[in-house]
Image (cartoon, rainbow, N blue to C red; front, side):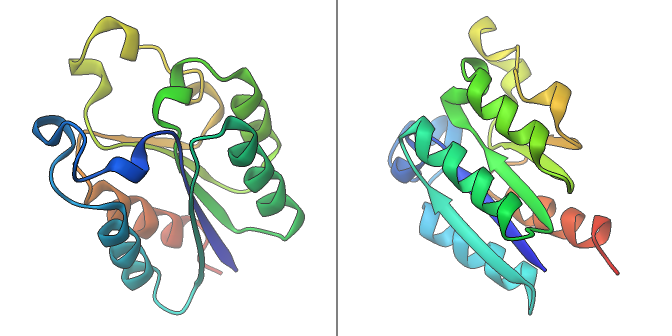
Length: 143
């Protein structure tokens, strides 16, 4: 009963990169919040700047029976057919997450390749959106 949280390129710079858009919260703080929200559920939390690593983690989540997945694909949201294809294989609920409201930003950020294949999308709630996504997964996967 493990929840996977995957973070794409440049999210390791969270708290430093464009704080006027993404805020001052670090990825380590986000991970701490997620672990608290998950409680006694298992949680795997990863970040990579490499598309192939994200795909490998989706495959690992599938192969190890991951219960649900939250993914902030960052820039891969708009460019990565391979990440989209990997997400299509995940058997449980998948939540696509964005810290900012991608629909209020420049046009390049308006078309997510992931949205058509995920269960739900969280966008524009800031870094705390991760906590909402974890809680939503807990509700979706309650047994």
